[in-house]
Image 1 (cartoon, rainbow, N blue to C red):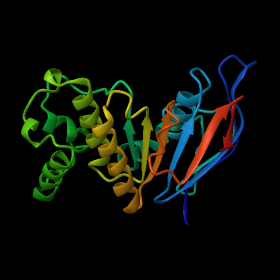
Image 2 (image 1 turned 90 degrees about the vertical axis):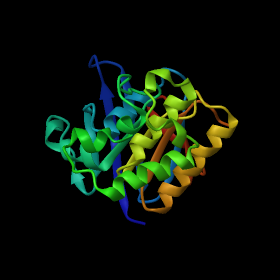
Image 3 (image 1 turned 120 degrees about the horizontal axis):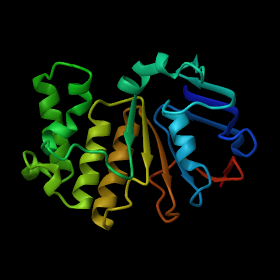
Image 4 (image 1 turned 120 degrees about the vertical axis):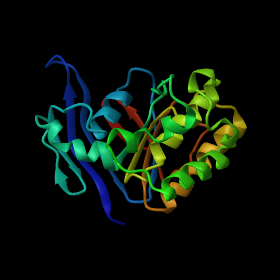
Length: 222
């Protein structure tokens, strides 16, 4: 299996003294789902931000699509964030004044990509699979927490990125909607997208290929 990401001996410190990540190793291939558990404050968000090219690292090596990521030049990798990485945040980060449809299409609108008929059909198909087609034109400010999370997930997967990074993606969902999310991750992984899920809920496997626990700045294979 081709490696999409390979991280070796990664270290991250904010004050030059205490390392949040300390000698961390990680890799993920196309079509894999990997789940990371960890207590609050253990560095899960820091790890996700580094993988998502939102934050730099102190030392080590990070290869994304065989490109050596220079932590001092993250702006050089904007195209990866824009085209190849989909983010699902615990806090949604939706635009309340826009409709469900427009929020899902934001990755295309933000990057000034023309919207073809096939893209619009894909949106409808996604909405139907998440049982939200009837809410297509509703403002997200009027949605429930679970509905907003589903919109955030659809926004992340609409462009079929190479990597999905999900931070507590089912934290606000009931069992039925959680099952929809797990199925969505499995479906997109089958198309070759790698999925990294961070959660505190050890009862959720997300159809994962490998499970890790983050503690002491390192990842341990469970």
